[in-house]
Length: 416
Image 1 (cartoon, one colour):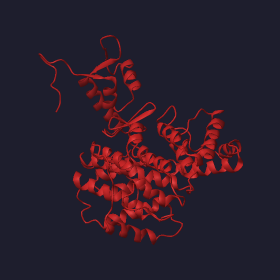
Image 2 (tube, one colour):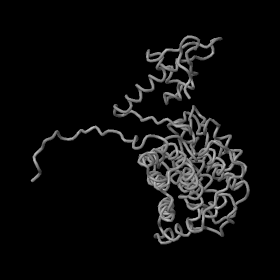
Image 3 (tube, rainbow, N blue to C red):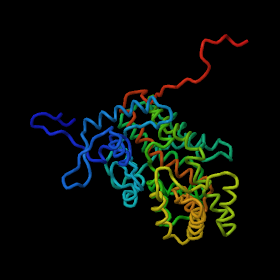
């Protein structure tokens, strides 16, 4: 329900800087830039700490900037969401600090929080045998060299085919799908060692499909925390693809498949695998110097460093590094990661990102280079479902930009 409009006896609605920034879809610094350019007026709060903004004026600017973004090439689209806020070097799930949330709650609980805004202690996901069997059959038929994301994508399609209720887009039905799809995706992956019992955490079941080594409690905690930290990250490329699919009213399995199709790019989910291979090279040579030199000589970015949304260290990396320091087996890989950061910082001041932290986890746990991509894809499925749920509540087909035709002017004669 909207607040009453200002009038006799009703003071105008004022917004804080953060509220104005959220409504405009920008950072707080940009709000003040609007003020300096005369696009927005502000009023100092009593005592001189911070500013407030007229709500109607902010809403009008939000409508104008939305139209400008839609009609101007080169500008980034903005989609209002209640899920994730990235602010400076921290990020929040539904207003709660994501790092603190994942430190205290399991991946399943984090997923439920993203989906429903309610914390369900002890949340656990299990899949019906029919769904798992359908997914396993098609995944087992794939060539041996098939990558993990290909396997997950095929498993999602098979699980969809086994679900006659997949076209029900009600919130209750989509949530039921989510709680079945996640464990189905994990169960469809070929195991590296005897699998855990069905009642084990999703992280425990996933570990058995990524590593042939037994996992201690601390290692499972790192993997579970990584899943939670990666569950969502605003409108990444794969998440935008999911929202486009959901805007066309594709069912949840298809929306997740759209995300899996995008995540394979080296600039997205596959980046952790590149960092894993680089980390192994550093461990083999005993120094990051020659490895970094080779990356730069080949004209490549050094994987695992820098993030366009964080001027400082990626908070996800910081949280995972702190947990990995408690695991003795991770010490060599951690030292190699620090060497990479220090060596590169002599020329470019880049901080470690979550891909480098994932590489330390996977390299020190006997996992293949593709394991980081698998962790990323499974984790992000929770966020994709949350975004699909949001998009199902919006106007259908709204994610439809207009093309700006730059080809030859018609009419042209038919080609010979």
